[in-house]
Image (tube, rainbow, N blue to C red; front, side):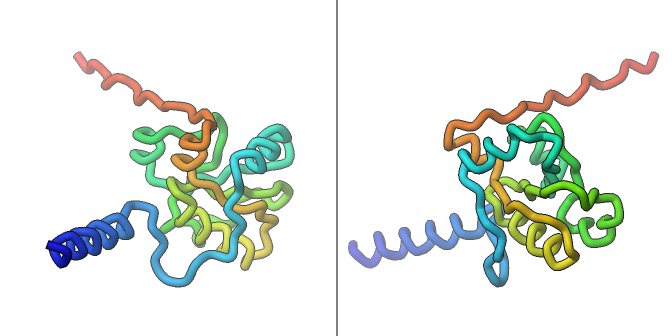
Length: 141
């Protein structure tokens, strides 16, 4: 019986560790911001840029922040020219995994990076996300 429970625990741990925003490879050097730190940055919108590296469906399904630049992580390096260099950047993903990788990449390219935050983590800590409702399909009669 103990072996069965141990096996089930091990399988659950592995499955949980492979979730959507889990980091692959070495851990990020980026600071994972607390809700309080992130809220303090949000209070100065003229000084920051939220860079959301999630897919559009993740933003729609999970929610996001009212104003952000959306560049999926896989497309980030080839779109660096479009990212302003005069603001402090916060990289956003679901649980800060891809956000941390994005923050590291930006820092290597000389951007000012405050850190990363997971939108879902922020919400579980009491932060409010903006829920995005997709527009109704056009009626092409």
